[in-house]
Length: 160
Image (tube, rainbow, N blue to C red):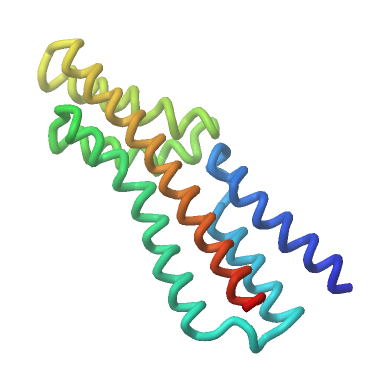
């Protein structure tokens, strides 16, 4: 029975990385699913309160990294405050619109339209829109690193 539970846990961890490319898969929830399966079905005493608090903090960091990376990159690439807000809002909406492409294309298009409307130049609007794409990709990299840290921390906690 433990072998089956471990297979499910490992599958959930693998799905979390697939969720980086398909945002409709809730990456962090699959990791938590693995943690909870281990805790309730294999060994309830191994994962301490320090582990749970640390995982909660990393989860918050993971969620913030994904949303804030887009708006920060738009700002860095010359976008306006409105462009930053549109990038953040578009990432959230894009998750539900034609995944996985909606989360990439919607912020790019929305930021381009807003910046073109404000600045009336294709060059500046394109630069800010490219910032939304770079922000999205850097957010995914940050999310992947944080997920990797969470999973490694889990294995170190149960093995050491």
